Image 1 (cartoon, rainbow, N blue to C red):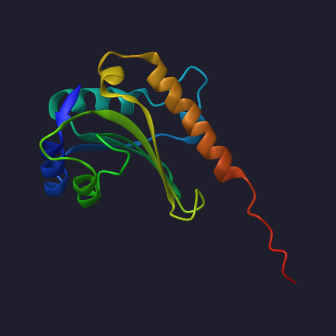
Image 2: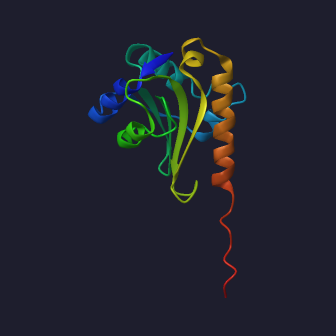
Image 3: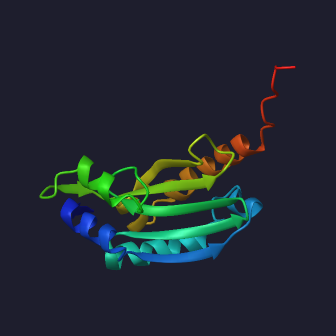
Length: 154
């Protein structure tokens, strides 16, 4: 699925993208068969089909928020100026699906974003998309669950 960069930029600037929030726990997200986020993926599929740009916000707990977002570049939807700088307004781009985690302990910027598939994968129910997400979630929680590095100063 392709989308004109200018359409994305205008949608992001207006904050006019589809968004819905879900409460899904860590254990559910890590289910072996990749079905833990089915509700969020089903919503995202419908929203992308209707609107192009959309997000499913997953509140895991008070410290961790995960978002499934459609975009043309690996930047959160809240950064329209950066999307505008890095794309050509008149050009069509592939619409992709990104996983975003916001957590204080994930890294120094408290945010990580990775492409997990394409909008076509989402719309065609490619099972690899959900498995990619499950694996990505596991990797992020492994990072979060690591003990903080101990200071060597005395």
